[in-house]
Image 1 (cartoon, rainbow, N blue to C red):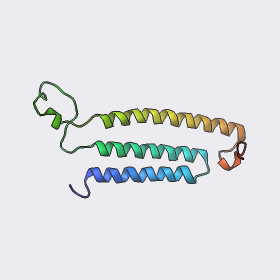
Image 2 (cartoon, rainbow, N blue to C red):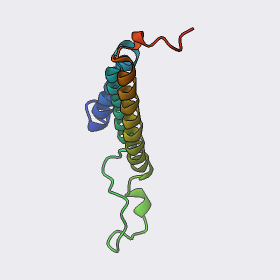
Image 3 (cartoon, rainbow, N blue to C red):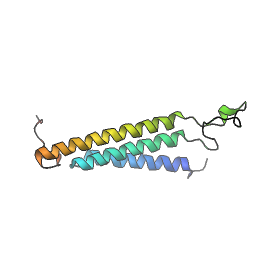
Image 4 (cartoon, rainbow, N blue to C red):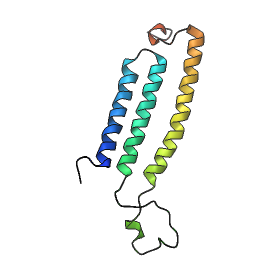
Length: 123
């Protein structure tokens, strides 16, 4: 395998996006910026899973009469990582929407999105 093949490039890009998301979650004080960091973390995870499931020179797992041969299992890609990522995208969208609604309610209550201003539940 080449050093700069699509598998390695997509893995590196996925890990970079994941790390940027973690950095945004942990270092930002604005709730909206933290939600954006979570979305970046989620997207980086999706890219990593798809990159790990990628197999060069294989085809989609769609069987028809032309594909029915004795060695079909060696010619198709495992569909589980793709299905997991599609499910994770939908769940991530729902969680992001929930976080944005929660941020909107917090802003209506305190008139700020800075997490340092929310000290109601601090010790």
